[in-house]
Amino acid sequence: MANAGRKTASVTVRRASAGRLRLKPIRLGFSLIEALVVLAISGMALAVIFTIGTKAGDTGFGLGRRAMAASDNDIAISDLRSIIRSVALQPPSTFQMQGGTPVSGRGDRLEAQVVMERANQCGPLGWAGPIVLSVVLDRDRSQLLCEAGGRVSVLLDLGGSAGSFSYSRDGRRWTRAYTNLPQDAAQATDLRSETVWIRFASSSVGDVVEVASSGPPEAWVRLNDGL
Image (cartoon, rainbow, N blue to C red):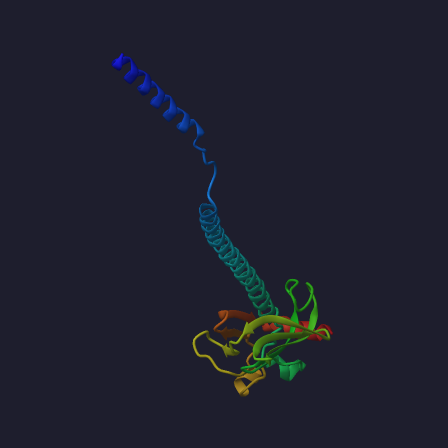
């Protein structure tokens, strides 16, 4: 009987324990503190992602702007080369016989007659007439301006860099001034062609060097005789 009583008591205890286990509440989800911690971590992660995205976007736009500026500079430099090649450079010896308009070159200014070999920012293909290239300072920014046909356009925006022209008859010795007017008796009488190297230098675009040539002087004489 004693053993039977102990067994009954043991069963009763186990059932009571099982009942208490079933009655214990089960907690689902996060506590308030855990939720706040998760939200804080998520917010920090999003902030890092947005910061990286913003910086990447700024970098991308910056690269795009620099690429566009480089492309614009390439076009402007190509136009400048074309203008220099288009200079109608009259041989010095023909001025005494035929007259004409000389080229006048200084460090900050180039004046010449041109016949445009192609369309550019200063004029259309085949346009003929006087042209002035000048370096000016506008609100702490240097610009190379082109004046042609009563219109002024910005050929090159040099930013804060200065720019200047220089000239050479042989490609080796450079001066800050040039004219194709005869400088002595030999130039005034010798029927020779004329060639001049024109260089535009600026730290923003580097050195741009191009050649203008008169071609055979006889062609100038025949042309003017025909007029």
